View 1 (cartoon, rainbow, N blue to C red):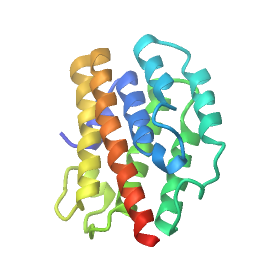
View 2 (cartoon, rainbow, N blue to C red; view 1 turned 90 degrees about the horizontal axis):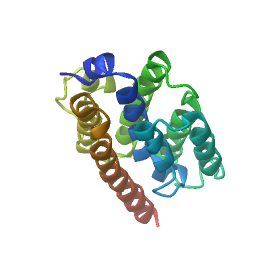
View 3 (spheres, one colour; view 1 turned 30 degrees about the horizontal axis):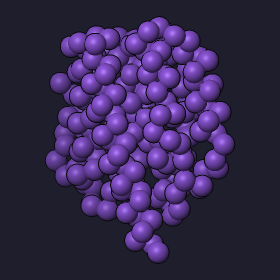
View 4 (cartoon, rainbow, N blue to C red; view 1 turned 120 degrees about the vertical axis):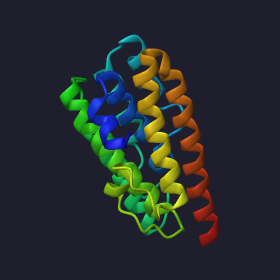
Length: 188
């Protein structure tokens, strides 16, 4: 099933987890520590106050400027896209609100990975999301797999899939942090 189809079929929790996972993987671009979004993950598991935790995360991640976490044109654009994901996060978790956000986060995260991948990428983000992956660069292909995996875990396991979805996101965050670090070292 394509990513577009998975998003269309996901429930409120799956959509919120999908958007949050995309944002979580991009935290290295925002200058945040690895645990900054953990309380938001907790609200998906225990029904806590999403809006309150979202505001705390925005406060924690808003302290740095768009160019503070990474240097260079691609990183600046990538950081801007990540900031927009955070800014667009809805305070409510209705299916309509989180579906729009999850879809936007999916597109933004794939664009971020495309910007930061040194390999040529011949496929558009829309094609990737629809399941046509020929010519997709390795970093984008890996991000696409992570997005699909998160949605499948939540669809197949419900709340019990959150821990595995967080693990998938954590692994993706480490990959992106390494890419940003490698690019920064290459410019020195």
